[in-house]
Amino acid sequence: MHKKYRAALFDLDGVLVDTAKYHFLAWHQIAESLGIVFTEKDNEALKGVSRMESLDILLSIGGLNLNDEHKKELADRKNQIYVEYISKLTQKDILPGVLGLLENLKTKEIKTAIGSASKNTPMIIEKLEIKKYFQAISDGNNVSKAKPDPEVFIKAANMLGVETEECVVFEDAKAGIQAAKSAGMYAVGVGMEEDLPGANRWVTSLSELDHEILF
Image 1: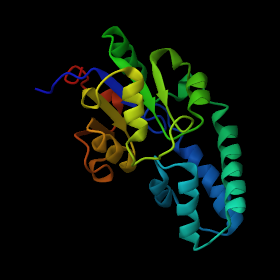
Image 2: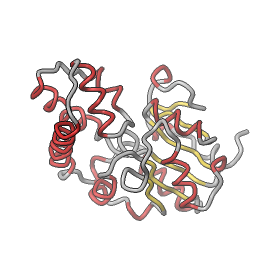
Image 3: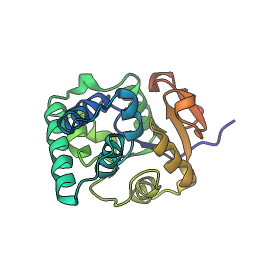
């Protein structure tokens, strides 16, 4: 029997909403402009990683070295493309099982927070109309270290007023699982086990989750 946890921390992209495809399309446009071949498999390495670190990975694929000013221009352009995509998000884009889980957690008075590298988190949850479910948002706007550093999840726990070992993290990225485990949290990998080593358990969708075990 698992212990019962007091808080649920959610990554955003790929866990609550499928925005990974929009990140890929935006980075693909940047790659094309630089003459770099960038595939969906390459995009896996960018999941859960900050924008500038993602750009560095992209540039390393193409064997390019650019100055900081040029890199900032490219990162800003990528974000502009991405924001154009996500500005059209609606509640229909929420992934299966998410709303049911959030409603259940709310009924049980389990504390909830978002822990995401994305600086676009406030805009996305507004578009999805799910802001009411979260008591805290720890994201790229108020943390300085990207996953796999555990800062984003530790800050979320602090904002909720709970201990790190009292938290369950829902993540779809390897770096996110590493961050959750480094913070001493229980990690649920949303995806395939081979892609998310180190998680405590795995589900392909939150609709599969037996949350009664955890909360």
